Amino acid sequence: MSDTLARICDDKRRHVARRKEEMPEHLLRQQAAALAPPRGFARALHQAIAEGRYGLIAEIKKASPSKGLIRADFQPMELARAYKAGGATCLSVLTDRPYFQGDDTFLQQARAAVDLPVLRKDFMVDPYQVAESRALGADCILVIMAAVDDALAADLVAQATALGMDALIEVHDRPELDRALRLKSGLIGINNRNLKTLAVDVATTEALAPLVPKDRLLVAESGLGTPLDLERMARVGACCFLVGESLMRQKDVAAATRALLAKPGAAPRQHAAAG
Image 1: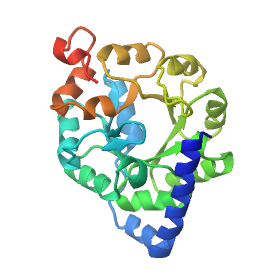
Image 2: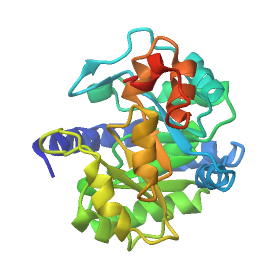
Image 3: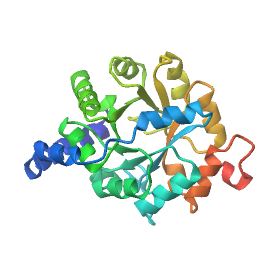
């Protein structure tokens, strides 16, 4: 685990401890039970692929530790609508506050604006957060293998499944992928960002994709900003993508999303290199 990730996870554990005192888990579960069922995150991605489309998980992300503020004009509901208008299949919403300037309410606002399934993008270090995610309305959680041991990862996935949610299992290298494939989740995300150097190399997905069984849905993450990037990932079997920063920096998010999803050569030239 990188020093940055270790620090984030330590801070998150302290945050969760405070949250448990403020809101006991049984009350969260009561709130979750009162909500409509999850929208089917993995199902939506599978449907997009079956229809011959890419499965785009478009991310609502205000800031990051490495880049600072990404978008000053940050309106989660408007961004959610723009992503849907541009052809996104699902949303991802950053809720971590200290490092990403996120907030739980961003997820609630985005999900209320559209009918797309939503991933809660945060650092899951305690099963409590799974119930918390469902109570917020999340349809899927993120499990970062670099941040958890095998027992916790399995517990997080089991808790999500019990609540009707999906779990996207994120890996960065071969050992993490081997661990992830032992989990009962059909969603494998390959993050092209090196957690130690923060450098991005889409060759990471190209190297790991052949090792992912065909019964798992593969999601490429980070470093994707053009139709040619998506085509390159699709050639190795990753037809679903999690894209945030390259879209969040665009003035017209809906147009940028449409341009990204266009087949190579079909997008207007001024959008082809967006991001």
